[in-house]
View 1: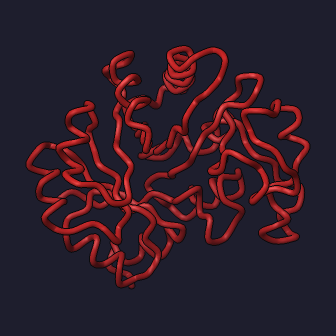
View 2 (view 1 turned 60 degrees about the vertical axis):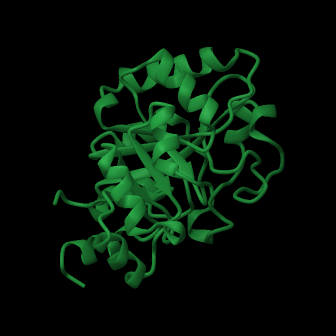
View 3 (view 1 turned 45 degrees about the vertical axis):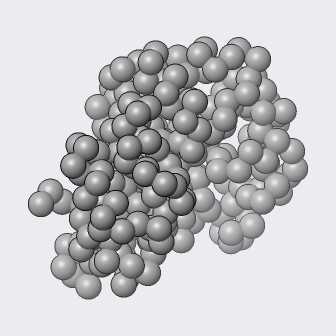
Length: 244
């Protein structure tokens, strides 16, 4: 059995503000195999690393990322809501994040719905060009709930490794295979050994999210997950490596 890859969910987000450089740097320092993150497109066409479409929950500002420029987003504080020691932390661009995590084995980027005036194809092409420019295409996972975006990305760039994200879905492995995906990314609570077996029989990998409880981590390893996405990569690493 190949080693289970531990991916830090939005960075080591149990200990630092999610989807920020401090969280990604901490994940690297902890020795996580990779990271998981989320990107949206700003009004002026820059990829911003943030889970929500709006900045309301994670920053001291309000507004939707698609309606804001990079300059406007950079003025906001994405750290102090987590802890005062992180005050002044900004939302990174995709490039700023890649500068930190490009050394890792797995870079899992969730693409959100890109509703920009440049159009879907241009958005996906720009994303692809950035990944290629960093020389990390072979270790990049592009995941999404958006089947249309995943299918179109694969049509434009067949060499991209795409993965279907889902919570509860009937026949996920079959659905993923139909749109050209190489893996399924289920919420761990819906994942069974039968689904893992079904995916593996089709040549698909299984990376589950978001697993923090030690008992759940052990169960995911036992049923054969290829990757575990966790807010606590240090805990998952210790369990995988037999240190806990």
